[in-house]
Amino acid sequence: MPKFADRIKTMEGTATIIRDLFGAMTDPNIISFGGGAPAKEALPVDALHKICNDVMADPALSITALQYGNPQGYLPLREAICKYLLEPKEIDCDPERVLITTGGLETMNLICQIFINPGDVILVETPTFVHCVEVFEMFQARCVSVECDDFGMILDDVEAKIKQFHPKIIYVVPTFQNPTGKTLPVDRRKKLAELGSQYDVIILEDDPYRDIRYSGTDLPPIKTFDQTGNTVLANSFSKIFSPGARLGYVLATRELISLFFQIQTATISHTSMLTQVLCAEFFHRGYYPDHLKKICQIHRERCNKMMECLDTYFPEGTRHTYPDGGLFTWVELPGGLDTKELLPEAIQRKVAYVAGEGFYTDPGKGTNAMRLSFSAVLPEKIEIGMQHLGNLFRSRL
Ligand SMILES: Cc1ncc(COP(=O)(O)O)c(C=O)c1O
Image (cartoon, rainbow, N blue to C red):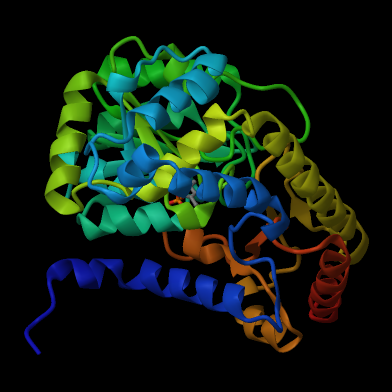
């Protein structure tokens, strides 16, 4: 076997975490708070059943769906994104500045191809979304973590680290963050966009959870404060439509979109036309507003159940977020409990979570923390799983 490329070594740590995460998610005997999948009841099966039939019965649409397509993405889908997802948030957009990606994660890959040489710095939150860090590491970027408080990135530290490390990109998940469920307040969103412009850094705003809100008020995306094109908005259809459809999009300047276009064409040609057509039909036929209400309702109930169980079953001194939306809560255990060490025992008790350590780019942090996802577990199973975890943690104190 020839020697592997250097990037395989840099990706090793994060790759193991992601493998474990999917492993626990797919075992039917385990109550898994591990993955980040939406509830299966929140997938639009009936609507898609009808749309699929209609599309295949339509002589023109069926061919569009099954043929090669425009590398920038199917125009009706880019129009739907502007009309139904971006304009309601007062984001200045037009379909020419939108490119369709194969899931939100592809945007991370494409943007690294545009900006990242080995050793270039990307500032990330503490803790941050491990899957994107894996992509950044594949490009041999150096991920430097920014201090965060209960509301996300502390901007004095962002500015200090911009001056110290001269990053190319600042990666941020501003709404119901993965893994913590925290939301960046509006003043920090505005300031972050300004810092991007002032220091000529890309603010990579990754916002797949923003519409899945259970309480509180909607906040403007960072992109609405961008005056110079330095903020790039990445989003995904995984949580509001279907993760299996592998659809995402990116909004950026025309200049950047033409580079995204060039690189995507060179790597995968374009995103699946079949899923783009189905998704565009879903939005243009007006299914989205009711669907969104339904998915918020399903996930809100699960979120509430998990909050209740945390307060009932977990040991005294446990700290956790009360997310206003999204799919995750972040838990910190008292008494020096080590979540990575306890995970095999939790799995023996048929419950899985993701240990916190893997979400930090600095070793040794988050040993007492864990990410819990409530989205894919029925409320009655949440109760059972949380009781088992609570008993385990209490017994170790
Ligand atoms: C913050 C964040 N960004 C990106 C992604 C990737 O999403 P996709 O399934 O669209 O690739 C996820 C998925 O969980 C996520 O949580």
